[in-house]
Image 1 (cartoon, rainbow, N blue to C red):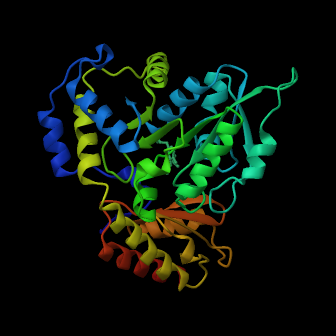
Image 2: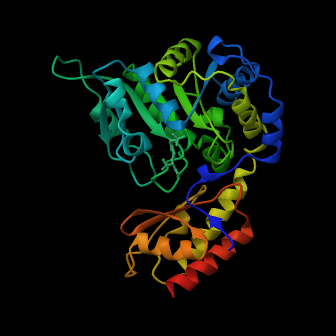
Length: 344
Ligand code: TLP
């Protein structure tokens, strides 16, 4: 049976050139700082984000957590959107492990947080309050249609943070999707941010890994946090080698994923029982809902899966499809045919 797997861009497998690079990677003990391939990836990542230094970590969750731990002490507060991946899907690790108090403010439908809402959440110095330390932005914003947040907005939050002596962390798991969709350099999206995390193992198709980029002293703090979390990997150059290919060969092609997602959204909009506004789809994430159908999201996902099409049910009436390296334009047409058959 033909399988079209749109559950996530995390399901991608390493490309042939990644496999070759991994097999030939020069390695050393990275806890001693002696893995040349990890060191090269970290230098490359720092440069791609316009930052001084970078740290290779196991996952997006770890990248965000070590960044939060480097920004905040126990009892400090971080401001983030109520739809943030960090808030929804990272097990509350900031609180559970870091003792960091999450202060959520509403995300707008485009993933931004209104400046006045951020400002209203900043704590004055008062013995009753935790201390606000950092503002977290997510770009692209996963739960807000994968929307890319523009340079002007990112800069305006940076400026606000600076005026209150706060820091900004960009949870940029898909920052290159944002850069490609907006036609800007990723550096410009994070130039006012103090730290940024991004993932190699989503749209860029590497098997494992994320990076944190910031100043050298911040990265040294993050390195200590990574070690206590058990993330000090040894001959990690085998993984970093794939990451180098991800950065050098896999960024530009994200435009294809965006075009495929757009086509999928436009097709879905014409199908009975499905509600979606294709205008909202600007990167590789497609949310749609089936409030006009009798089926639940789980039931629909089950029926589609019986025909080889995999999508992710996210709530009783909402589903998500994500395009990636293994999905072709023809797969999208095939997927739409399956949707038509199943929705009747
Ligand atoms: N997101 C996954 C699921 O957790 C939902 C997905 O399929 O989209 N930040 C963002 C914005 C993410 O989307 C994800 C993964 C992460 C962080 C966490 O990355 P990992 O899974 O590497 O810890």
